[in-house]
Length: 256
Image 1 (cartoon, rainbow, N blue to C red):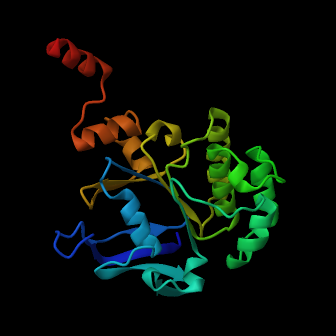
Image 2 (image 1 turned 180 degrees about the horizontal axis):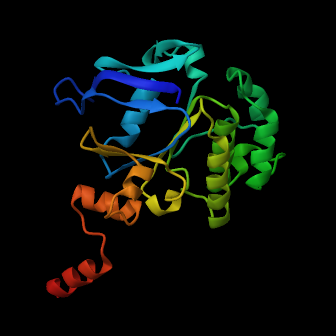
Image 3 (image 1 turned 30 degrees about the horizontal axis):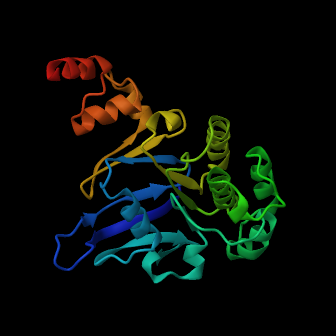
């Protein structure tokens, strides 16, 4: 697989007076995968994504993006590096334009952006083309942002809680679009708490716990192990939380 991004001893803290949240983070992301990024609230998932994208500057080390056979430092924010990485946050304000106008305005920043792909994604997600984006519902705005991100054909797309605001039908379409997007030189990282929604899409899983990578596993390898049931149960065991309804009912009766 093609190496897309890797970190070198990346460390970060929100304040010089606080301990480093990330210490010497080592991570490599390759093409051809849908990575599932999991972790508790406050584990640092969004912060890590911003560090990988160059939206935040590490105190030491670097996030390196592969561009044309060279590694570029993400935090330097060079246009050729930014064209290879797209981040769709959980909430964002898009320009007050229609989706086709967005493609015309922002699409040229991404050399492999495809207007045809964008149009097809909008149709699949049932987004009106003639309505300005701020007038769309929250879920529709999310669809436009995700559709645009995938249409850039950038090497790496980060999606933070992409199913938030999407109805069930749109979630099904989203999963199909993610699978169709993957290529040898393209990957997607899905940061989510809704593990079951992406159970059959994710093929690599990253678990973040207190600013460190607790696990980086292939889903296929997990499935081959004898005690694997599903991603949610595996994750719950990993962090020491019971996911059994019986256990939760027992605990409730004990409190009564």
